[in-house]
Image 1 (spheres, rainbow, N blue to C red):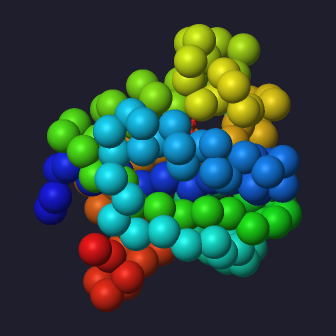
Image 2 (image 1 turned 90 degrees about the vertical axis):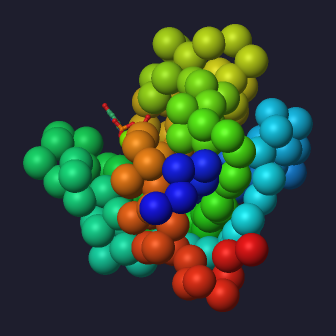
Length: 139
Ligand code: UDP
Ligand code: MG
């Protein structure tokens, strides 16, 4: 398993609000290189599977309907300490608690519609990358 990669999605809110370019720019400026990238849309089954760990949580249905409400950008990012450093770059799940300068502080509108996803461990990064990208889509 590669430990220098993480997986991100630019979520439907940020795509709809025209923030794809600004967010990718912030990611590049923070030293991540893009190893895979696509504009796509999650089906209900995709979103339910991707967020299966949360399926008992009260926000699960809202999360699935939000994540299927419009296109997303999926990407594989590479950098030393990618998972940890990307979580720092995106900030807290709740934008009200996100640090200044983070992507969520700038672009998230609520705890649910929070602009970006970032993997929370190397193990989950590998699972999430494989969920979204075939080997030949990764560079
Ligand atoms: N979420 C939500 N309400 C909550 C917690 C989470 O709607 O109280 C949504 C939010 O979009 C979040 C996603 O569920 O990004 C996954 O939750 P997690 O706790 O894994 O947060 P993350 O890892 O994205 O910071
Ligand atoms: Mg998470």
